[in-house]
Image 1 (cartoon, chains in turn yellow, brown):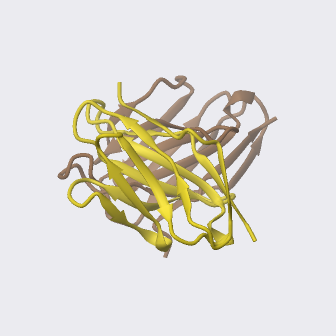
Image 2: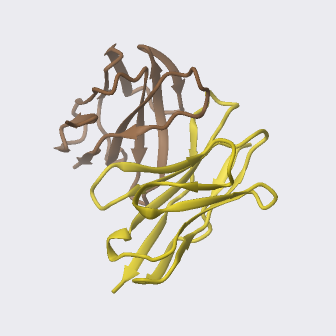
Image 3: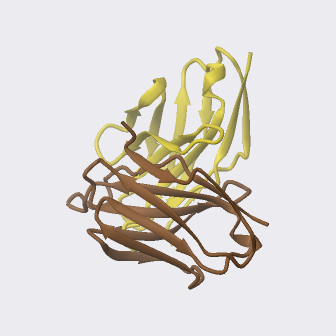
Length: 114
Length: 116
């Protein structure tokens, strides 16, 4: 079965430091991978996606993610964290065997401290 | 301009009541979704419509009934509300399935439902 895991419930980073939010996946075919961010009391906003091609994907707000097929990972990264990056981050993988619905991770709360 | 909008934003009601949540998208997308986000922030797909036809119907109680009058609207009607229905309900939309699996979903702001 297709699945996605976000192993950390919460990540704490000091402002200005690099951040990484981890995501691993399990799919039977080629993965389509997505990152979304949810700010408090808001809907989810699309950050970036990997479909094919370059393993390093750049997205909104200075975020990027690296697709690693051998490690089945799609970690979200940013070189220098901002306090305003504090939010809930979701990784998702497309399930090609179930009407292409998105399978969602449990979310990782990112806290950036000044 | 709001791409995906939902009404109401907040909904507080008594157990046993019937309520509806409306969703509209002005992106010209063919596919719309309803998600439920529980108190632990876990997201679960409920329904998906493509061009007004149901394509995903996850295991949800029959009390939940989606209705799509046209491809820009997907409403959610809930009968006989229960305490466990308290959650945030998100509507989303995406472009058609010509590029299977690659399309991005765009979310509405959510409807916070509290059943007392």
